[in-house]
Every structure is written in structure tokens, then in C-alpha cells.
Length: 631
Image (cartoon, rainbow, N blue to C red; front, side):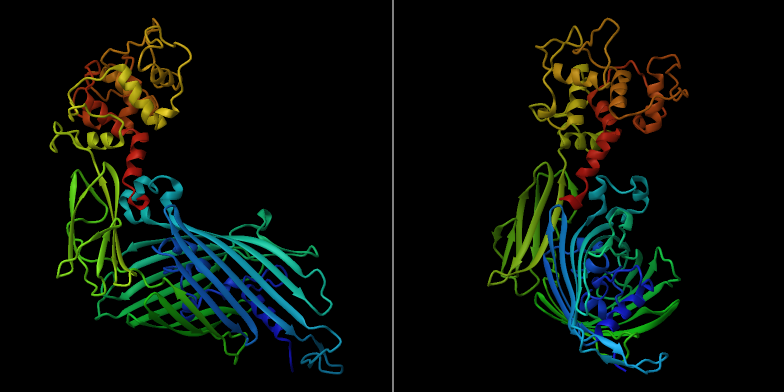
């Protein structure tokens, strides 16, 4: 009995989904790279290198340097697989690209021998038909970054405060373009094109544990997620939810146990087909990766696959990885129950996989530091004996006889990034460390024990309220109505260039010669400020607490609420009572809790800053300032 290798391949692929009539084969299901194949394709939770593209695109946010990998192998001894994938980090997230080619040519058509038993037919080569060829090309464009970069603010703000690791989630996206061709044996219109999309998440709830999820083929057929043949025939790509877990069982750090330099990872994944017209069981994947030395990895796994309707079998896989400097060579053996007795070996060669080790003992300055210091000391030791040169932000440093280095580094107000690199004698980069620091401005007349110190330092760093020429802030000084309007509009629009030139006089005491007219006009048109009944604004008048609170509450989108007598010295008939009640509920009045509000008292600069500091627009600006992942 002899069947064509092409027919056998199609049957094997179709058995994965059990929806042969409508499901299109995705070559990335096999072309995952030799490392994941050796671990039973359990990789969704780990996803720590360029191999993440095919199994969980969120993982491409992890590498800090560019990576490249290729994979080649034969399925069923005749079906060729080739892939090339790469990752390139940028300041806006990591970009990925992958090209996968699966093909077979010269497959001989068969026919059923006349007179053979229909229940056990005999297939013979049909010389009257031309040889068959098949290829399935896939191009993937990927993007991976921190999820809060996509959302534009810390994830689930309140929940993120209680569960900090949620603010460090990776997000990834694959956009996939398919090109398929089937020729020979009188086949016509065998070309097809299609597209699909994958969406992934990944996070580390514990230092030794990472979790991942990927919705593979998330684009519905109604939105274009399908393969369309020239003949008009269409096939869809089944949507699959892939969930994974990766645990560092052994390791010198960030692991459950330490055993010398041994590293052992345990991986498990599950695949759940989201929509299916037939009974598709959940498929499991298990994997182990053991590094007895930094130069070698030994792998094994279990890859569960469909072998019939509602039936599964377990494919036991093995693999080895060899590391040498920036290169890694991987080989995997992956049998398939649907094709017993046939060898299936896959090989990968990767570059940039070995992570850059951090320059150790940067003892004086931790990463993600918030400080008010003008100058910090950077002291360290180049532990790796290969390091002969240290550069700090590109400036070469001298190493002592003990490989130590030090530098007094002047910080700018706001965000600072310090890149420390270690090079060998030939100039090859072998170690790196990045320090991200936020320097807050401080004022000599606002010592640390001042009640509004934190608010004043953050507002000053953002440039919303500036100090005086002598360097002081003068927290007890009063603030005028014109100054209040100006600082709110500068905060709202972000730059002077966005503030339009005034064309009309809205208030009769604010004419075209007044320095704050453009701010007051914009604030009035935005509903942030209001004048008096006689159509005056009184720009030079010192603002009261109630007036300042009203401006800042409107600026922050605070809703007016029925007054609940939150403050003993404010009557329900007072003009600002609904604003005070809404601001109290929004948390703007934390400093005034438990004491009289004195709404008609003049608002000083420290109190104005405190109210601004609690408003939502400024809270978002401060959150962006403290988001070290965007440094």
C-alpha cells in the first residue's frame, strides 16, 4: 500500500483541528523553532526569546537586544520546513518579523488499483497525471511592549496598587499573511491568500513564575480572518486560546531552589479551541529544560495531538541546545502519532540569544530611583574578566587594578537614563546595565518635613508651577486669579504653542494688553473659570480657597454633588457647596479633612499645589513621569 506523501501530510494537519472541510493549515504550528519543539511546544508562559513570535507574541517584549533565528527540518521525511525570525528593540516597543515556508514538490499522484478491496484499497502511482506540488508561505509582523504603554496609563490603577505585577504585563500582537499554492494532477485555481491575527499577554506574579496567554487566530472570518482560494473556496483558521505556565524550579536566583549553577524550568501549556463544529478536546503540552552548564541545555516534553474525533495521543519529544558566546544551536526530535516510524528532526541556529549580563555591583545607584540629589555617585566593579573598558553614556571610564570604576553623574530635572556598558579588548559588547532615575526639583524653603513637600516637588518637576528667580518656592505666598488660570491652561494644553491668540475681550477688566488674557480666555471657553456678575474677572485679586477649588475641580472634571455637610463651616446654601462635596468625594481635599475648610480664606501656593496634585489630569502626568518602562 503506497500513498502520496502530500496526501499523508494534509491528513496529518487536518487531524489537529478535525475540521478538514473548513480549516486552513497554519505552518507556524510546526515551525515554532527547535527549542519549543524539544519541550513539547510548551512555551506560552516562558516566551523569553525570538521563538515567542509563533507561540506568544507578548514574549517578544522581553529581549533587550536584537535577535535572529532560523529553523529547518523535514516532516514525514519529505515535507520541508524553513523559517527565519527576528526581533529588533526600539524605544517604543519591540518589533518582530518572521517568514515561514512549508513545501513539497514532485509528489506523485496515486490511484486505487482496479479490483483491490475497497475496505483496504491498494494505491499505485498514476503515471498519467502530473506530479503535485504544495507550498504554504506565512509572513508575520509582530509587536510587543508593556501593556500600560498601549493603555497610556497604569493598568487598572486601583487594582494595580494592590497587585503590582499587573502593571508590568507584556502585550504582543501578530499580524499574519498567508500565501498557499497547490498545483499538479489537473488542479486549477489552487492559489490562495489569507490573513489572521494573534493577541498575547504575559506576566510574572512571582519572581520564579511567569504566566502567559495567547489567542491564536483571533480575527473572525467575518472580518477577514480566512484563506480565500482563486476558485472561491474559503477556509478559516480555528481560534485557539493558549494558556501557559513556566516555573524556575532550580537556579542560582529567582528560582524555587538553588543547586549549584543548575537551572531547571518546568513548563505546561493547554490549548482550547474557542469555536468548533465538532468535539475538540483540550490539548496539553509539558516541557522541561535543564541547563547543567551555561553552555548546554537538555530538553524533553510531551506534545498532545488529535488522532481522531475526540481522541488524543501523546508525542514524546527531546532536544538539545548548545550555547557559544552570542550563538545557540538547537536540535529537536518530534515524532507524530499520525505518522509512526518516521523521523522528524528540526534544527535552529540563533544569534543574540545569550542575554547580555549586567555589569555587577553598581552599588551606589539602584535602578528606578526617585531622588532630589543634583549629583549621584556611580561606583561599580567589572566582575567579568573579559571586560577591559567601561563606558557610561558613551564616555570611556578608567578601570582600577581591581576592575573598579566610579563617576559623579549630574542629573537633569525629570527623567534620566544612564547606560553602563562593558567591552572586551576587541570592542565587543559583553555586559550592560541601564539605570533609570527620576530627579525631582527641590526648593530651599520647602524642606522634607513640609506637609506639601512631595506635591510641590512633583508639580515643580512637571513645570506646572515654577519657583522664583532666587530659587525659592514661597509656599505661603498667595496666588492670583490670573495666575491660577494660567497654570491650569498650561497643564491642560502642555505647551505655550497650543494656546491660541485671543481675538475678543471676554471680561471687561482683561484687555489685549493683559499678560494672562490668552489663558483666561481659554479657561473661560473651557468652563474652568467664571467671572463675576458685572462681567469682570478681577485677574489681580488673590484667589480664595473656594474659588481655587472650583477652578481645579472643573479642570479635573469633578462633578458637583448634593452637599452632605462634610465641613462644619460650610453651609449648604454657600455657592461652592456642591463643588466642595464633589471634590471631597474625589479626594481633592485630603489635606483639609477633619478641620474647618475656611472657604473664603486666601489660597496659598502650597495649598494650590496640593489641590492640583490630587486632580486626575495631574495624577496621570505624574504616573507617566514615574513609569520607568518608558525611560
